[in-house]
Image 1 (cartoon, rainbow, N blue to C red):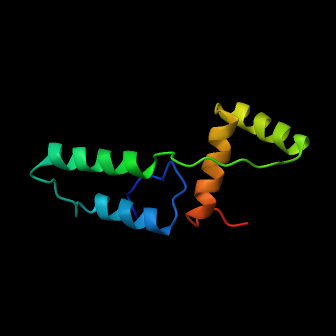
Image 2: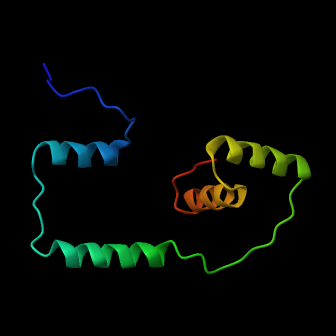
Length: 95
């Protein structure tokens, strides 16, 4: 019988593989942790840099629903819209 705890989060296949690899202690620490963290932070800041602006027209009822969803999630509505667009463009949101 598997003695691992029941997962708290629902993971996709890639996330399960990573979690299993970590649980099997297949990961090793890097020798230059500070340098690697700095490189990762710089890459993340470049990746998430918002450097383009768009202007779209949508129905007022759609915008009101989006604002309600954003308020429920505790996000500004423009952040929610940007997040949905990012997930779609990255292939993580299938319509």
